[in-house]
Image (tube, rainbow over all chains, first blue to last red; front, side, top):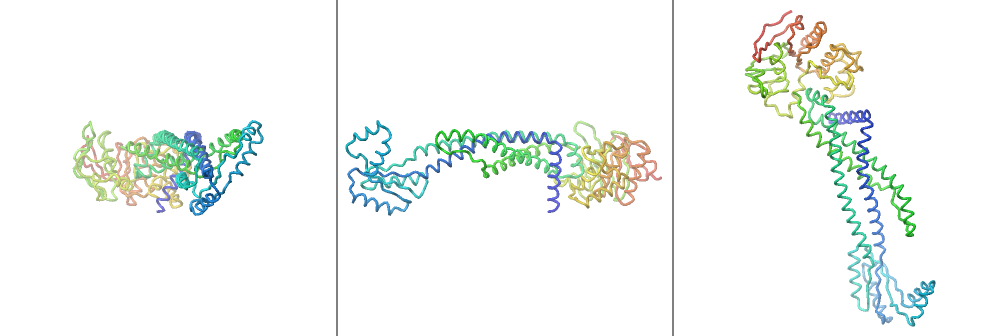
Length: 306
Length: 223
């Protein structure tokens, strides 16, 4: 056990020494990894935040229940008891037609043209309405609740205004799939780049490998430093990606807040997304390990000692 | 300790490098393998050290059949040997100390115990004051001694040297031979391949003479 641990500590120390000796090339391969991972990372950050934003919008969506125009007080209270019994409703409130009419008139009061139009109506065209907040924010649950409410007698129309949010989240889901695809492609490219770097290192250290084999080193002993090198490249690349992402987000946020303020929204990208950052570093390390593993297994077998 | 039984080695596309060789080397022996260049000396040593496998016949080292050794077991077999080459095979990107410690790392020895053993080995070959020096700054004789220190640091029971004095002048060569003699006297089996009679002038041991791959037991050398 201590032997095993020693072997790893020594390998790690050896690799770190080598990397310190070759700072520039270590930095360059890390940059390659960082740039390749930064692109999908940035897209993910945007899409992920946007989808959280739309989820939030969806959860705030009310179901509007418009009653028949000729509903009397009894019909309204009857419907109210049905709503009170429904377990999936968080809360609801009634807006009587007179109140809605007043509100509409007040809202329209600012524009002269509209005022004319509204005042030209001699009687209130609006129905009584319930505005319902559901307990669940799931689109499917909302949909079935809407249908349930629609079937209550005396209800003219139940309206769930989440269609636009649904469309947006479908687009975002597609966006996420595209990101996954891009990430996969870049991951393959990185595998090749890291594998090639490790293969070059193996070639420059051929003498050492031959000598080690001659004095009884096992293949795993020879392999371990190169695997560590791959993992460390991934780690440095991942950390650099995170730094780059933070920098880019910071720059972008200036423009995004400007843009979103025009839409009177306070939308901006979050600076720190620790879950994403940890995943990026983890993925980079995994790619580094896999790339070097593939390179090492083939190259070491091809080095003959006799 | 080491037993060859009708061993033949043929390299692809060439003649037999070693033909029907049978001999035994006992533990603690000092053996010289002599012959002109191309006579099969290196082949014989490589067969012992499990670097090459025989085409036919059996090679037994410490009762293990080299030709039936699994690839995964080969590294552990090699750790029984200290190998010394004509071209030293030192690593020029690290200093003397780091060169010598490599076999210990492979064996899983580290820390102060490893450092102690490295210094003991360097002391035996007279290079204790050069532990921080880079091998490239050493003379040919010193480089060969460094290679010997690396070969003996893990205390192998068998030392195998392929033309260790090939590139050295007579006085350096005699130094090297004295070192081998000293190891042999503490019980290490020493096998030295050499085409050079000078190096053997002051030593004693058995001679295995090779002529175009055919083994002839030579006379014992006594000083």
